[in-house]
Image 1 (cartoon, rainbow, N blue to C red):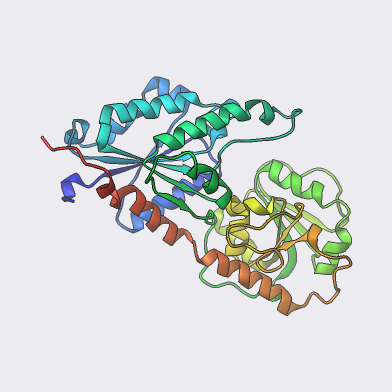
Image 2 (spheres, rainbow, N blue to C red; image 1 turned 60 degrees about the vertical axis):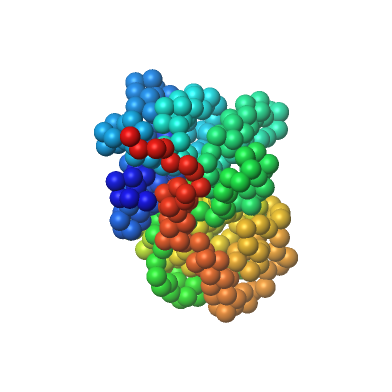
Length: 366
């Protein structure tokens, strides 16, 4: 492919801060380090009304590309709740269809499914919008020229919704807060357990810790350290000392994780691959303690090997949860992470978006 026909690269993301935007920024920085620029388009229904996605892509292309010369690749980061109230965003499908209609074979659409659709009991709103969210995900999968997602559960569902021959890659998410090259052994760190993430995520952890103080103490936890925007989580789930440090910059959070022995979260085991909090813990060599109910392991993870599921552990926990055992858990978690870190994923996704254009017929040049 000649340099003047090298595809331009775009990333589309919901507006505002959050894990998806941080994920995009990590990719953007890594691609720039590899010599590939990417244009970021933050898109909402209101922003699309002001100027369509097709127009925004056209504005960034060299003039020949606005006709039928230079191709472009659009990496759409999809999480329904980011694009619409209650995760309902049919307008986004309309924008993508208009983009494909204007540029035809000159555009390659790669969809990164951070989420598919919600589900829940009838007394929760997710139950009533789940069918609409699923329809959106089905149509989006059918429109895509390539698909990327973060768990085997998602991939199994997506395989039944795509056109024949569409590439589909599964990679658990990478850490948005850094990947230290070396970390101290878990046993040489302060015996604190970090809880970080969105306010609702942190509150869920503290709620689930009720009645587990003795178990935490036997594991060696001496302090709970809460990190994140907003006030400290409510409730007195344990009498362990608690600190709330608020929001930390990425560098500060990375340093704290490397200095802390444990990381706490409440996440179903079958979806740990899409948890950025879990990724950050294992990348930094923490012993991960999951307070969610035990369930099937997926994506190469094994409870008791790569992380500890507290409800699945026999009581009482042996008082001699040794330094060797703690180091082994942290090491195995970090080894699991090392097979799909940011550098590798950025290269693979870039190949899917840019270097695989031979699988799509390019337009004839004028």
